[in-house]
Structure formats: C-alpha cells, structure tokens
Image 1 (cartoon, rainbow, N blue to C red):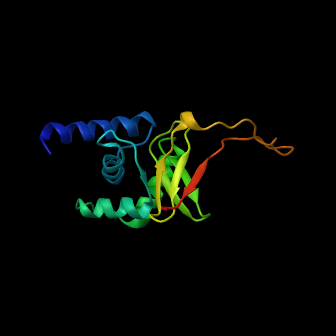
Image 2 (cartoon, helix red, strand yellow; image 1 turned 180 degrees about the vertical axis):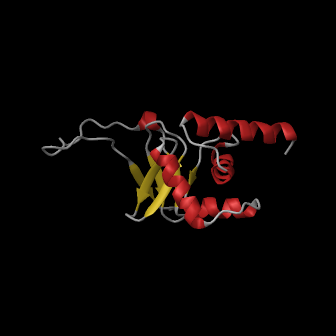
Length: 142
C-alpha cells in the first residue's frame, strides 16, 4: 500500500467517525479503517473484525470490538443484521436493502433491492410504530 493510499484510508475513516460526532480514538480509528478505509461496503461479525484487526497487528480486545461496533451502530454508522436470533452481522451500507444469508457459509451479502417488492406489512400493534423492516433471504448451495 502506498503512503497516498494509506493517507486516504485514514482520511476516509476520520471523516466517517467525525461525521457521526464520534471521537477518533486509536481503537475506533483502527476498526474504522478496516470497515470503511477502502471505500467498499462490507458485512462483518465482531469475531471477523477482531481477526482482521489482529492480522494487521492491531492491539484490540474482542470486548473492545463489540463495544465499538455498538457505538458505531448507536451513532448511525452501521446497521446490525441478526440471523438465527444470536448471530449478528454489521453492515456498512446504510441504505435500505435486503440481504442474502448463505447458510452453508455463514455469510451475509447484499441482495438486489430493485428486485424486492413488499406490497404490504402488517399494522403495528396499538402503542407501537414500525421502525424498519429487515429482509433476510436464506440460501443454501444446491
């Protein structure tokens, strides 16, 4: 990686954090660079982000990764997608879009939003409002 590419990754990460009003701590910067430094959208788990940080020599605990991902979600930088009730993926693409969950690979990927049609959703119960609708389409390799 050239110095120019590295500087652009740092600039992109700093802008991403500051745009949400988050202080750019060392840990946040390291994780932000892995998440958005190259400008591509991605889906990560806390464990996969921890492994990526470790492989680059980053000194960050798994608990810090979880706490940082939560802070990024709370700041509106990431969307949490839960599959199987316990496995969470974190998506850097904040637009409304469906997902494919590849069961054989435990992998989440974007599905084409333009192909999804939802004609109607049930009314929210009394005293509640619909905040969002997540669509996860489960796939298995044939």
